[in-house]
Image (cartoon, rainbow, N blue to C red):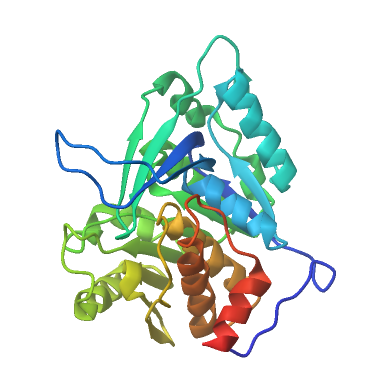
Length: 312
């Protein structure tokens, strides 16, 4: 890999506006997910902050970039206040609003050592819905906008319009079936980098042909760079000038929670350093893979990622 890690003193760090939900979570590690009406023992448990936009923001901040989180409110309770302190300690920009007399929703994730993850989220639309009123001004001053597709149609549309008006490039994380990427065609054509994944329910992820076809269809829909992640089978990426196919490094899996978001952060990290698509995708792939050695979605250090690449 022909790149070196640059410290914040080498360059002026870019700012990424990260739009998506926030909710605290509890991750549980089990050897095997139990069958219905069965059970199993929990091997480990850890609290964390999700969802994807928060994970991306934390990772980018850890790697020396500026991340401005645009998100929903939480309750003014112990969990909400802890979340606010964690974001501030991580250096993530943006004001997390805490509303009185409302309980902060919690997500429960069960992760097994086969790489599967099942989630349960409390319904709290009074808080999740506040993302619709979030201030989008930070997008105007950003070098890129990261968007979670599930933030809501109106919110995503407004954010894309703001970015388009201000000439801000967009990184869109969208989950579409391998058969129907056109479902989000209106968003994809307005994005610069588009990331999606092949779900086991769609088709076997080890079929690289399907991943290539999906990446090509995303490019035809307007994406300048299309990335399709394939879990432990790696990823493919395509632009007008480059095509990349990578295998994921083998790691002892503790939890896959947040791996896709860490991958997104890795892509933006390499992109803003002017790396080739190959080097960028490799950094993202290793960042996501090394994260899987940890139960919670905590990004490895950038130097740790680069060191693992050089040793491969």
